Length: 112
Image (cartoon, rainbow, N blue to C red):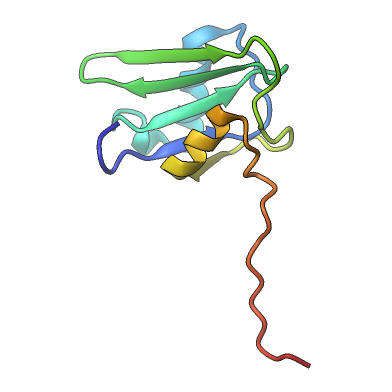
């Protein structure tokens, strides 16, 4: 992955029956400016056992997938929009660690 490459995860479950064209349509509808940049677009199947990653590579689209034999990927069930994630979060997904529900930082202005 090149420096500056963005990673987008499509929240919720994605049906993979329609293959590449359907995934491209989803990207084109939400973030058309990024479709030919080499940015990564992640999708998770309905049973959360398969992730697909789609990206543009110089002269065509590449589609990469991983299916786990046991367990499931940590992935939010709700939503249907793309969310930009960090490289560290990308790595956590493939290690099976759910960062989606991590504690959020609280900022207080006063103690009492």
